[in-house]
Structure formats: structure tokens, C-alpha cells
Image 1 (cartoon, one colour):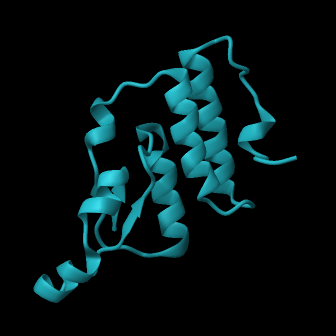
Image 2 (image 1 turned 180 degrees about the vertical axis):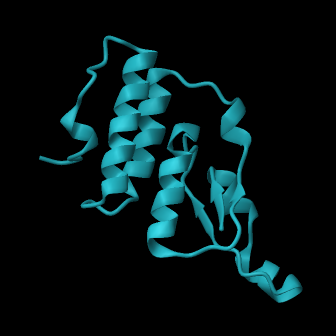
Length: 118
């Protein structure tokens, strides 16, 4: 399984890898997936698949974040996960922590990360 940011979704062509090399490698990506959610996304992947190999996009390890960027990129991941998922709840809590740490005027707990609608 190859996971990470938008580059994974745009540059990896699963059908071509299978056709040319016999590899079955599926991408799991969101645009600008934040690095602090990588371990939770690995847990999420293993909830549905049993990959023999993980290929990890390393670009997020060198990207900086503001609170606004962290909020947006975290919500992209949250919105793509099962609503009633323990991993989604972990990702929401971690995103709230990071956003608050980057800008302490942001609330330490915000229900909108857990419930994206009222």
C-alpha cells in the first residue's frame, strides 16, 4: 500500500505497476495529508486490508504548517474516513491538538472535528 499526499494519488498508477511488474499496490491518499495522521492512517488501512508492504510519501515530513493549513488538511482526512470509526476519533483529537498547539487562540476541543455537520 502506498500512502501519503496528493502526489501518491496523482503519480502512482496502480494498473501500470500491475501490467508491467505484476505488483498490486493501491494508493491511499488525501491532498496534503498531514504527517501527524500517518500512524492513524496506517491503523485505518489495516482495519480494511492486510498489506505486505507500506510505501510512505515523505514530503509531509519537510512541510511546515500554520494552524489554518493544519485545520484544512486534517479535515480532508477526517472527511474521508468512516464516521463511526475509532481511528477517525483519534485523528480528530490529534488534529485538534496540533491546531491548538500552532495557534493557542484556537479551541483545544472543537466538536466540529468530530461532527462535521449539525
